[in-house]
Length: 457
Image 1: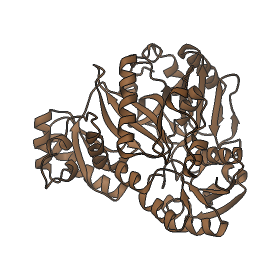
Image 2: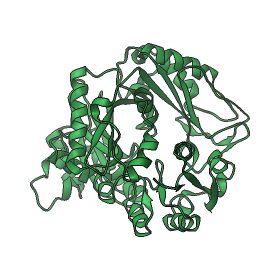
Image 3: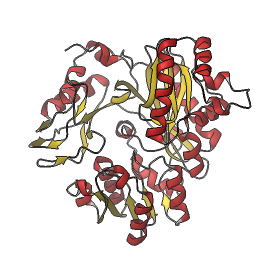
């Protein structure tokens, strides 16, 4: 087991990793930008080092600065958290070169599954179904690597074959970013070059592929864990269809909309994909599900997810501790049959955003902060009264989780917790979540990724 771990992240996820390390008796090292001096992860770590100026490019994305601090502090492992360098194969490779363990999957897995086109190719080889698109159309053409589309003419041809609307997607995209939706040939002409330029600017890779955009879609994912000895298990599925700007807003475990037969098939497909590449550590296999319960491989996230909390609640398994144990070479302590699913869990992402102003960011000083409690309530956050939300990072400031013996109890507890949560001085998504908890579509468990488009005031 590791003796000292550096957490290469900030905010609530850094605090979450620190707590897991402390539970395991591991010393912790925090890094922080000059904007994060007063963040709780800095105060709770055993050691803390300033990494640079506020912008991520000057701090949390500075791989060599992080490695330098890791060597000065004498750590034997780095946990990348979620976001920033968590899925960066080059960073993991640098860690290995300096004899520092990267708490996550292998470099090869990061490289393979981090590229959307490569991931789709691996899923196809494993027998998973893909949404119709350029990967399928070009699979036999040797001059087209993994279905990447290079010209608008090629994109138009594919779109005419599979039908509009289509999604133009960055192969290196993730977290809902790097996607443009073309409703017809005119919009495709306009959006294709925009999508490529945005992909290059955001991910340093302008490659895109085209696929059918499924309307009235549901977003369902499966949590997996694998060790270095070939053992792989799943921890059930999560419903992630309620989104804003194609980024998740509310998640549930397990999905209330899946027929049990389809749920079992999705679990099997996720394990099949992971076994085919001998995946190790924590990961999430994501699927899009249409109105007829047909499901298609979407992508794989090779890191701990924001919504890992709800899988923990229904299984009793600490996923971050498992990440650390598995990265140290330990075997999974259980088989699939040992994992039991009990109750229902819901997570509401509390973002520093104004939901009534197109989710505009709302940085600033928190004048008053009162967190909810009671049976079945969990709040993962790094905020407190007097804390300043900086404008440089993701707007997530907390994850409110409610657990119940069934979905009705979980919804009731979430509604209560949202009414107790008080954050003054900035705008948050709390009021939006309260409205969603009262919406009949949500209460009936029948909703799609376009849920917010039809939410009444």
